[in-house]
Image (cartoon, rainbow, N blue to C red):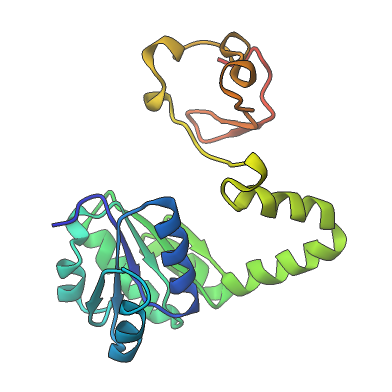
Length: 205
């Protein structure tokens, strides 16, 4: 019965973190996991919604409401399984946002060709983060503070044009006086073509 929910495929270390963050952000999600022991363990600790089954089974994806989902996150350790789920999900839902895990560099292009919008390599990201804590410790600490929502009053979020009240549309950042009115600092602006302006000027409409 869920709609505009997130489907998490696989509940290993990556899937657990995804579920934790989505839960804290207030998103509706369902977890597909074939290991019954894992489901039983976590069902007693968290109010997560599980469907027991293999994510590479089309019937399991249908039971998870793939046709009505807003996003699919594939977290399985085998790239071949992730590629199949990406293909099946894209076939069943043209508009769903698909984020996939990849273990090998050679799998990134294949996952994108299969229909993934974003491909993440957790090991690579983790290693880069650790190295950055040595080369740029203050910057990384600052970013970690922002990432921890609400910590020290700092939080990062996205607002689309359609989400703005009609009275705030088609105005420049200077006219909005965003920081004075709402306490918000605009650090980036995305154009229609997808290009980003970092620290946009007050004349940006």
